Every structure is written in structure tokens, then in C-alpha cells.
Length: 406
Image 1 (cartoon, helix red, strand yellow):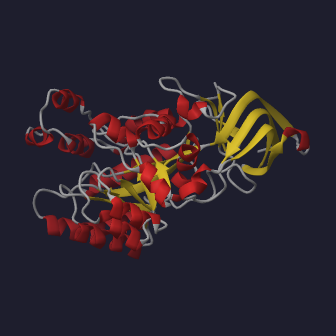
Image 2 (spheres, one colour):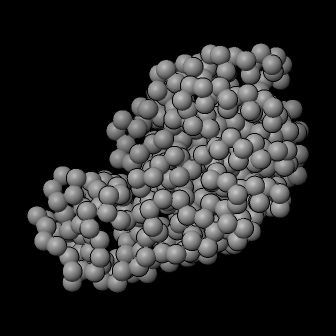
Image 3 (cartoon, one colour):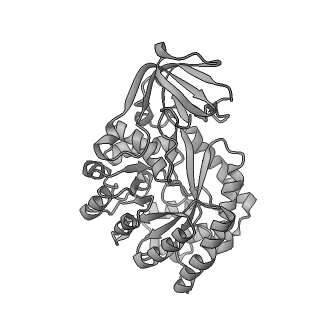
């Protein structure tokens, strides 16, 4: 693409590149009356407009505030069916265990997803991912996990690849080992280690493996076995942990040097200190707190202790039907106690680190030129606005995406 100088920026705000922890999450660089030079899809220069170098082309952003493109590090955007009956029943006081006994809950999603073709799954996922893109997500992680049987898990990951082939933002696929079957649990874990993970790695269908470590899912010992198999195949490792109970999943994640450990609603002081002393990113998911009424993950205490904190939507049909990455940041400010500056860092460089990426999330020389032009001249509207999209334009690699450029 041609060299382009973006001008007409009221304020350009960015964290420094790379993951930030503790108080450093509040340390943003701000330029007033700024300009941004993009060359070959990368940031070549940023600073005050009066000091800007000459460029082949210019693009006036009309006084908008500019921030880095957001990274959504935790979504389940590929599924079939719906959970609307579950939602209504839960509001009427029906316990989740009763929903499962009726064939609802996650089991209904697993049945519908396993019955869907790869093309159907891709067709269903595309508008969900487009909604995240419109909300500012220029990189989005997408998990499998609703297939349960190995062929269905493969179709889910192939659907991510199919959508990603023509999608304007980067999609990062993750193999999620979500829940064990009711019977033959030991054989299932062995099959995942010996068959599913090697097949996914050989076909390049995922960059990481995630395991749900919880009482109704996998034990700490099973999770260690599964993640060890993933590491042996060159895949990154991640965990869902402490959503309902603190079983030791956070400590396992930190001990393994996992990319991230996500949820943390049930985390206490021991887990907070373990994360503060590690490089594992603590990913919080405020959409779950809003939708299920769970206690909020202790993001304020995590930051104050010195941890690396990221924010994701957890977009899924059962516990977080949240289709906006920028709204996830706004909820993290209100529900989890992050400041606006911490939320921006959590949704950019720290979210990228949760995916093992260090080339995006900051608008500094040498980083990917993924950025957002807001409707507002004040960047804080990104986390202030509720019910309307604060994002006017989404640029990926310096190019205006069609979703926001019509």
C-alpha cells in the first residue's frame, strides 16, 4: 500500500509496546494535534502534526481521537443453535443443573454445533465477528470447544480458517478442550492428547490449546496432562480457571508459563499474588458478570498487586452474548474497577500478549498500523459510551475496513 500520513487527529493515545503490569498499565503516551505515518502496513512515525514528515498521500481524520486497534483475546464466536429458552428459564429461577437435565445448557449448543457443517458454522460466525470488528477489534481470538467429538472440533476450526481467508482483521484460532463426556472420561483425555491435538497441530488449525479447569469440567491433573500434550506439539497454552471455584488452575497456569488464564471470578489473594509474580496474563471477562450475575473478577486488586491484566468479551451463546469489544472495556471500568487508561492497555497490548503477540496494540514505530478513529475528539469516550458505538473508523494495516468505511 502507498505511504500515507494520517492527519487531523485531535489526540493520539497509546500504551507503550509489549505487555504492561501494575501501575505501568496507566502510563499512556498522548499527542495533541497529532499525525501518524504508515508505510507497508506498519507505523513508521508518530508525533505532533507540526513535526510530521512528508508522505506520498495524506488522509485527514477530521479531528477524531485515535487509539490502537483493540484485541479481543477470548471469544467463542463459532456455534450453532441458540440458548434463548435457557435464558428465559434461568430468569424464572430454574437451576442450571435442571436445564442440563432437560437437555439444555451447553449440551444443546454442543448438539447443534456438532450437527452443523463447516460452511454453516462459517456463515453463522461471520456476522458475529463483523460486529466485533465494528466495535474496534482488529485482532480476535476464536475458540472451538462446542464440538466435543473430534470431527466437530475440526469443523469449528476449519470454519475459523474459512472466515479468516476473506476477513479484514486477524483471527487467532484456539483449540478449546471444554467439557469431558459423561462417560469414558479417561479415554477422552487420552484421545485428545494422542489424536486431536496432534491432528490440529499438523493441519495448522490452532495456535494454542485452552482447557476449562473447573469442577464440572477438567481437574487440575487432567488439565496439566492436556496442556503438556499441547506444548509437546509446539502449541501455546491457556486456561479457563476460577470461574466458579478456585481449584488450583491459576497456580497451574503460572507454573506452566501459560499465555493467559481467563475468568478469575472466584480468585482470591493467593491467586492474585501468583499472577502478580508471573508473566501469565490475567484475562477478565466482564460480560459474564453482567449476564450471569457472577462476582466480578478482581481486576483492581490484580493491577494493584502488579499483574498483567487483559479484557475480553467471552462472546458465546450461554454466558456472555456480548458483541462489542469496546463495550467489554467499558464494563471492565464499571464492574471490575479499571481506570480508562488501564482498560485501554488491557484491551490492546496486554490482550495481544494473552495471544502471544507483541507486534500490535501500540501506535509506535515498527508496530502494526491497526488503529481506530473515534466519533469523539476525546479518547475516553471509548470506555464512557454505552448503547452506541464510539468507534467511527477501523483501520487494519493502515487500510480503512469496509465494515466501517461505507
